[in-house]
Length: 456
Image (tube, one colour):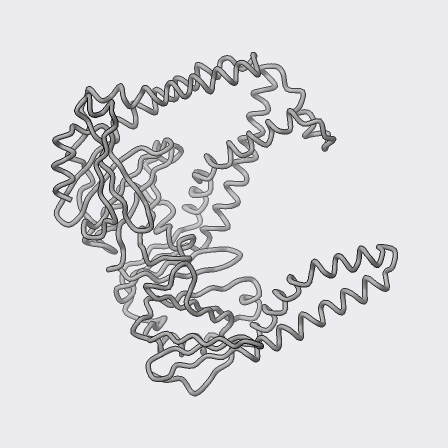
């Protein structure tokens, strides 16, 4: 199919280019204001107007120099003013056409299209920043990726589930140590800061330590909550003509398309806050995601454990089936799951107690938590090789993680044995899928691990 000659983007693209150009000249403008003196309001106004005018001119020139067309079964994209570039993408090579709608695009009622090919690397092959709804629909149809089709299974993240997702977001585990470190630096800092934060430097009792910990947890929870709401608002996944279409986002709405036959595997993750509630997150493993991994990696942010089976059967039948593992570490390997985490927890607790003596109970708490984590890791670990798929269940930072992968899509398989494992007749079996996602089962009986490796 061929479009009617060269087409230009919507004029909203010129405004986006102008904003980008204004960002580029922001530093020179700031330097000019400093040189001109802050007392000269006339100079500030002149520089501001000059910068805005220059940005508008640059944006318009860049917009006029950008065009696209579909001709002879290929998408031709031209851009650049002084050294024009032309990109030609055969329609047969196009794997996905994703949509993006940022604040400026939504303001003008337009959308952006990102054209992806299997070998496109980290970035899209062609980025069309602003198209009207009609132009976007015509181009998608010409590229063989219409926005309409035979719709199949669909699952939408309801407001109640969005709230539950935000309340139990796993980002909390990442933010806590960051904020804790920030407060630790503040406590040892001699700089003058706001009065409320300066109090953190005077913490020296057990009661104050608990209060400070509560503040850190509260701030981390709030940040994690807001990040989850922004990321997963409007989350929707549907199956259309053999493709999964995933839409999400509050400020910037993104939609990615992934062919079902390009899915390498799916991870089922249950974080410490979600495990007691029987809730999990599903993550997509696909080599072809490229730069879209930030958007398309989450297959669905929150669902009940009982819903996973029907969901997989509907969208990826090859990966559906029992998740029970058949090969597990022997009972004699249990202590090996405990030794390292308990020793590390004891070391951290000892260092903390040395610097903050009133925090000595933390030593006992850390050791107890590490021991429970080791026992949990032992009980979770296991492997199943089942027809055309492999199931690997493991423990990762308190989360129960189950990887279901197509055997023919595994990037690598390995059996590693440390000197201590060799002496005990044990081994660690690991598999890698998609863009380097690794899952492993530690301390399997060596003959059993070897048979599993040969089977894979």
